[in-house]
Length: 260
Image (cartoon, rainbow, N blue to C red):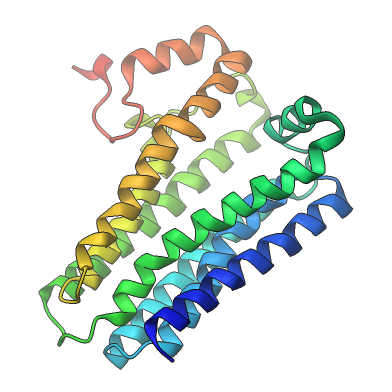
């Protein structure tokens, strides 16, 4: 297959998968299921690229393992947050605003999510296409990936453990990585996408891999991540969270201001 054919198949697969996920959310009445499946779809299409593209075989195998591990960890984490909980207020509010056209507009929303997943899968495409010999950039890429995945997993667990204590119901988590960043999980997620820049280095248009961490950074810091999360945190924790905002970086980990 040509590269164009492979990309077309990847795109069509995203359209079909997100249409099926839309049908699933309609059936269960919880649109938040898209968050769980987003990483899975990127992983599935990413593995497809690694199997079909003609780059260096060992690198394709490596990248296939990396994207699968990322997708499995993130989707499992999001599933653990999703199951047994009511629909996220974001989606409930959207449905209420859309009224009778809610499901039709939700389908469009899901397809936009699918387009985003397809664009992020291109990072894997570029890595799988890389036929250059092993180099230091591959080692750097793997190291960055490992730091990012371990850091994100630690951040998720630290917040989970904090929330399990009923005494912390109205408190702000400042444990572990959360002492140095208000959203360390977002920081490490962006760092994860940086790893593919190094793994793609050496192939044509490798620099396009920069677009993925840049786009993820934009969405998490300006669109769906930090703005919505902090709005909810202020609503539930009030002045305690405002004080946290004044002393702790929103994204990049650094020493809190009250430590000098």
